[in-house]
Length: 258
Ligand SMILES: C[S@@+](CC[C@H](N)C(=O)[O-])C[C@H]1O[C@@H](n2cnc3c(N)ncnc32)[C@H](O)[C@@H]1O
View 1: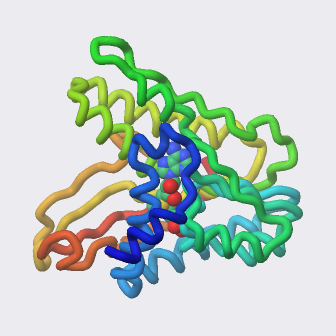
View 2: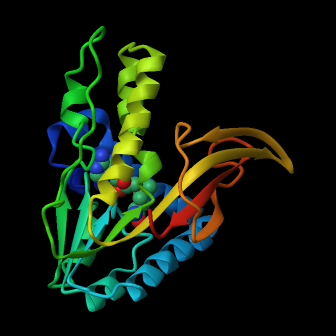
């Protein structure tokens, strides 16, 4: 608890609407969860890093790499990115202090504080009975020098806090569902807007096991489907005892082109 509190003082999340939606809290919770589940998460983090390395190797030009959802940098092979590209832009709504310390080691890597959905501010002022806002991401689409775009274990996370915020304020379930789905499809469209190699890594399904018995499964993509992935693996996200006595797995899919 003390570690989490200390980290809350130093994690940087300058966008007021992002803090209002709870992103600062999440940015602290992820590294804390990682410290507790380090061994269980290891294969997932290695697979994610490998997917990014494969994408780097397939880039014909290596001017700028844009990495979205870089966060705590657990799944990002930062040294390789920095060595391969002229410039590396790491984008997240919150960058933990430890990640910023790591970033400072590289002269060609920068951290940008961006709400990549471009919807957080409007969600904060949404009114019941009126249409919910639409996500229309545009960040860096005008940069012609971006040769690699990585969406790093981010897609399924994008609607989580807007959903929680709207539900707490009593918005209709159907409207919330539509809004979340639109956030996801807008992100996929956004990625396709770059003339660059794409590396999308996302979890698609959450499964809860009791022993060997599958108790529950939840679609994390609100009914959207992705193109056939280059690789697919299971992430043992919460070993028994982390949330309850069940084992929680997520199915992670890496798509290297959309
Ligand atoms: C599951 S983490 C990804 C893991 C991260 N790549 C790492 O290695 O720690 C999801 C990341 O997405 C970021 N994120 C969530 N919503 C976002 C948004 N609207 N704009 C930008 N980043 C967002 C979170 O802050 C978090 O760092």
